[in-house]
Image 1 (tube, rainbow, N blue to C red):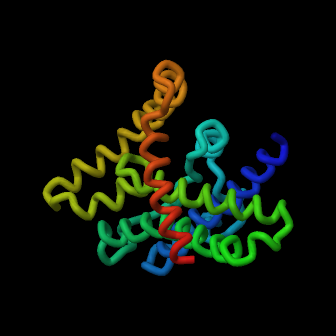
Image 2: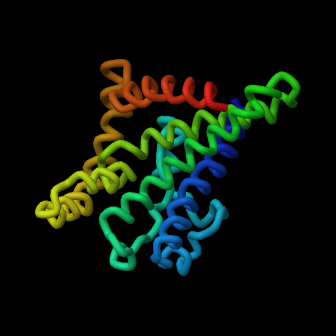
Length: 208
């Protein structure tokens, strides 16, 4: 039990730090240095861990980091570039999983057990975090990626919706975990995630 907690804690630090640093890096490359000035262009986990998102990792095995500050008015194309910044997080997670899969696939049997377990945990958590953040609900990355497909005349209304509805999604997650899973025996969000997770993991190990 203690070993599992340690593996998950190490993986959490690695995965969330890469995810959030990827957001900051792409934002900086696209012309917005807001995250850099706030110390987010770093792999230091203390800059990226979000208390609620971190707690959700240990409770439900999915969660999020502290949102990277982005000023879309610094971009040439605010909607498209914001979507690219958002996409960078999940993409970095899948890239991390792919990189970890290579030594696991070819040298897993020769590795010390602790190293192998940490790599497996980083791989699994990277895939889960990547999939979870692609869900099109605020404050997740998928909601900003989805904005690319929203007609321009509805942008103002959609961005207002994103700002005001974050608390509702967090509340839904808590209800899903505490009540729905308790009385129905399964989590609706987790059911979606785990099915997509299995498919993505097969693809990653085929490509690794």
